[in-house]
Amino acid sequence: MRDRGIVLDRSSGTPLHRQLESAIREAILSGRLKPGERILSSRELQTHLGLSRNTIVTALDQLYAEGYLISVRGVGTFVTEALVNRTRVSEMPEPEKPLVPTPAASAFLAAQDLAGNFTGNAPFRPGVPALDLFPSVQFRRALNARAWNAQALGYPSACGDERLREAIGRRLQQTRGVACTPEQIFIVGGAQAAFSLIARVLLKRGDHVVVEEPGYPNVRAVLLAQGARLLTAPVDADGVDIGPLMRRRAAFMHMTPSHQYPTGAVLTLERRFAVLEWAAKHDAWIVEDDYDSEFTYTRNPQPALHGLDGGRRVLYVGTFSKVLSPALRVAYIVVPKALHSAFQAAQQVIGDQPSTILQSALAAFMENGQFSRHIFRMRAVYDERRRFAHAEFRRRFQSAVQIQDSGAGLHFTVHLPRDVDDAKFSERALEAGVIVPPLSKYFVGRPTLNGILIGYAGSAPAIAKQAITQLAHVYAALRRA
Image 1 (cartoon, one colour):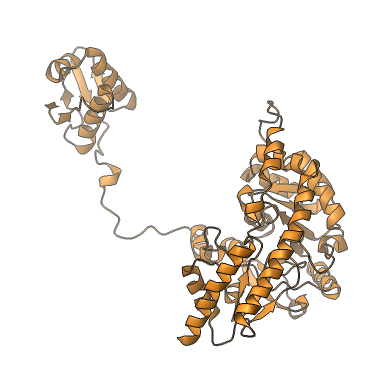
Image 2: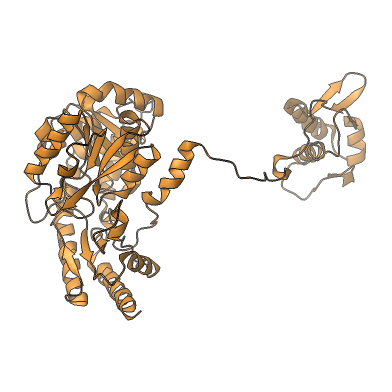
């Protein structure tokens, strides 16, 4: 039924008063009803549209409330005079020039490619644990055992769940030699959130930060987005070498001493002391990224760098993403006591924390021993998957590639011949459904390594065998090209 452009569909599931309200609003916004123009009274609309009075009054009341209409007693109902701009935003012409982003937005846009563009859990993706063996039954029990009282459901502490912080502190003391109080531990929403929080607290735009070369590109993305200037320290078989930068000042250094990412090198004791000497000399901080130190297969794990320093200048970062699941988005930072107030204030302002319900479940999962049992089980599983992947690469590739493996963590590297471009190899592998990032991606400057990362932990032997077959086909095609 039509009246002055009003269209009602009685067969529609939308109530008639909503249709009428929308039709009048549309007429006003499009300019068909102009500011100050009188509209039909409720009785007139009732007659012309054949609607009940209640339907019409309900629609008009909503338009009065939104400010589209005004009623003048004894005179009638009018379109509000103040509606001078009657054009819908969606109908406005596009600006001739794109909006200029803020410096912060520009920094994020420039850094986003470094933060990783792989999606899904395809075979060999680095950093993905055995999701097929996630202890879902035990974790669900820990989740169901959580108290659902008012205190548990309220706003969390800026530091995070106290029981979880206590459980983390106990495990770090026993397994990593990290001596800290629960008050020094901050729970955050994943490792990237940890690095972002650290950068916000410790950096000002233009500050220098030392990163490993090659190193973890996701961290570089955070630092560049924060306006940092990067200084690179070379990595060799003994880990990162701070020697070339011993005289250079920086706000802090990010490093992976226990299992260097991506090469897998373990930092020697001599170089550990050199890094601590550099930090003391320049009044700098060290961010120790201990992302997968729970898993060693051929040697005893190295104690954390944090233990050598007593936690005075070292901020220790750990995550549950590599040991349980990336979907949990739970990580933690152990901060020096001198920085506690600053980090607590930052957390109160930013409020970047995972679910308190999830934190409580993780605490119970650790307290009842299930976490330790899961780690113990996974060490055997990952060692088996690592050995299988080794053997299968040797069988399919013979001596064409070289495997570099430190016997720890969740990945190893495969070095390709110089005439096989690792970036192109990675791209073709992705097309074949296998994720193997190129080593060249991990360099700030000119790459000195040519190869791929193999994240074996998340791929059972049958899946790994199929993936390596695909990689062999990719290799053969590139050699023929």
